[in-house]
Every structure is written in structure tokens, then in C-alpha cells.
Length: 492
Image (cartoon, rainbow, N blue to C red; front, side):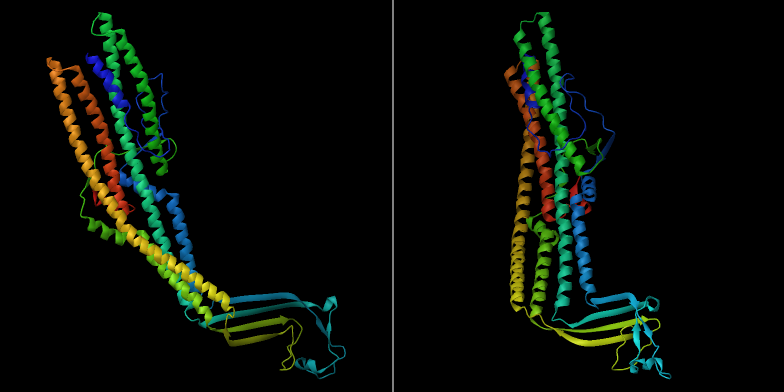
């Protein structure tokens, strides 16, 4: 009857609860399975072993999501630089012209007229014959400098600076998301590896049971029949199906972690620790984590900077109601060889000479209906980000409290499951001893072994859930994206 015990026990191990994992694949540590059921997986070219915070740090370095946010920050920094550069001479340009100018026909010029007095002789004419043409070059420099703009320049610079803060906080927000996803994958891999060990133990018991049944049948033992052998073979087929499912879950979890770390294809990414164990974490009072979250959460930084940026942009739009004061100027020089400059206040030589102009100007946008609409739009956007700020101030403490209470619940569940697992092992040892001494029953021993296996599987799932709950609390506090700081709170 001891063989019947093994027949019942094996199914519980192989049919362990499904493990959540991200849909990826990797050739990491294949499960033990019958050779005629599963082809052996190709051996990985390399093995990368990482601890939890090593994996988080690598994923943050490699993540294209974080890199995209960094590019957005670079863009915001460039806009900030552009806004600051517009403070001094924002309008400055150089225009050049290059052409051909006619020569002068002096055939009828009276003797004694100097070159700068040729404009007094009506017989002087432009000579457009090809041989008389000469190169003409000119350049004009224009500039404009705002003097007073009713705060438009200053507020534009402030808006760009606060927008830079918004994008910087966006990097932190995305980094927290990536870090938590990495931690989840890490513990999913550990859980599937642990369940695989239990599956290997079950397969060993199943093979031993088959050998015992065949041996007893050959010896003519009346305690077993052919029905026992058929039942055993049916259980073997069910076991093989469960092995295939668990093997794929394990590959999926390991592949997800490999892709999250952007390891090369063919690389097996494995946790540096072989066992799934609870992390060392001292849960402090709720207020401690709420205070840390208010200082660290990027959403609060984003909301505060967003309000400042929208307030500045509102003032920029309102400045268009008032006239802006500018000074500007134009400096030009033109020259064509062979044409003398006529120094007269009443005669302008188009091909030789210089121009100097400077002025004080007032600019007023008279499209007040457009300005009014732009101001209303800016006010609406400001109201929106203020509402988002109020929501963030309420949401962050709520998320921290939820994560804190979930962690407390996960800790209680883990402690209870640990105690239940220990009791299950004690019960199994007691029933096995009684059975070996002839005082126990097969039914009691079977129940004890089944219970112990179920409790063992549930314990490892509780460990995984507890560890993920710790990572969740670190995420909502705003520390998980900084592995060094997070490591000061977690003992691995």
C-alpha cells in the first residue's frame, strides 16, 4: 500500500499553482522531463547571474523607455537654453547681395569736375556694355533688442525652466515603473525555479513507485494488481503534461527577465541566489513612508513644476495686452569698383556707400480677441494642472497606505503559511513513523503527504508575494529607482 501513497502525492506537486510571468522565453535551466516527451533545450552560450538590485540597476541603464524620457529632458533643456538666449539681441541677421553694376560713361564730362561731383554733370550716364560691367557686393546687418516686455521674456524663461523639472521627474517616474517590473520578473524566476525542484522530487518518487509496482507484480504480491500499474501509468501521463506547462512558465519568466535586462540572445539570466527566501525588511510606521513619498515621488515634483510652468505661460499671454518696447538698428555697406561715392545729402548712389539706422520702437499686437482667447486657454491649462496637483497630493498617501497595508497582510500570510508548512512537515513525519511501526494507516499518511506538498507550494508563493509587496512599497515611496537607497532598507 506504500506505493498507492506515491500515486496520490505526485499529482499535487506537478499540478502546482500557475506562476504569473511576462510573455518572454529563454533557455534557462530546463525542467526534468521524460526524454520521449520533451526535447532537451539548447545549452545557453553564457550565464549571467545577478542579484535583485544589480538587475534593477542594469535594467535602468539599458531601458529604452528611460532613454526616451532622457531624450525628452534633453529637448526641454534645449528649450530652456533657447529661452535664456532670447533675452539678449534675439533678432540679429546679416544679409548680403552680389551682382553686377554698370560702369560710368564720362565721354561728355567737362574738365575739372571731381569724381564726387559727377552727379552735377547731366551728361554722365550708366554704361551697361559688357566690358563696362563690374562686380557689386553689399551687406546689411539688422538687430532688435527688447527693452521692456511686461514680463514676457522672464516668464518664458521660467516656464522653460519648470518644464525641464517636469521632464526630469518624468525620468524618475518611468524608472520606478521599470525597476518594479524588473523586481517582479526576478521573483517570478525564483518561484518557478523553486517549483521546478519540487517537480523533480515528484518525478523521482513516481519513477520509484513504478519500479516497486513492477517488482511486486513479478513476485506475485497480492497487495498490488495490474490496476495499480495502469493507474500509475495514467498518473505519469498527467505528470508529463504538468511538467510541460511548468517548464514553459519557467522559460517565460526567465525570458522576460533576460529581455528586461537586454542581455544578448542565448544568455541565461539567473538570480545570484538559488533559493526563494523572504527579504529582510523592517516595516516601519505608516507616517514614515508617507513623509518619504512626499519628498521622493516624481509625480508630486511634476505637478508642482507644472503649476509653475503654466502660471508663467499665463503671464506670457497676458503680456500681449500691453505694448512692448524695443530698440533696433540697421547697418549696411555696398561697393562696386570704379564708381565713386557721391557725398551729397540729396543724391544717393545705389552701388557705393553705407547706411546707418537706429531707432526706438513700440510694438503692440492689436488682435485683442486672439489674445483674449489665448489667455482663456492658458487659464484653463493652469486649472487643469492645479487639479492634477491636488489629485497627486491625495493619491500618493493613498497608494503608500495601500502598499503598506498589503505588505502587512503579506507578512501575516507568510508567517501563517510558514507555521502551517512546519506543522505539515511534523504531521508527515509522525504519520510516516506510525506507518513504519505498523500503527498508522495508509489514508492518514497519504493525507499528510498531500497536505505537506500543498503547504510547501503555498509557502513559496507567499514568499514571492511578500517580496513583491516589499518592492511595491519601495516603488510608491519613490526609492526603488535608486538601488543604493533601496538597498539600505532591504537586507538581501
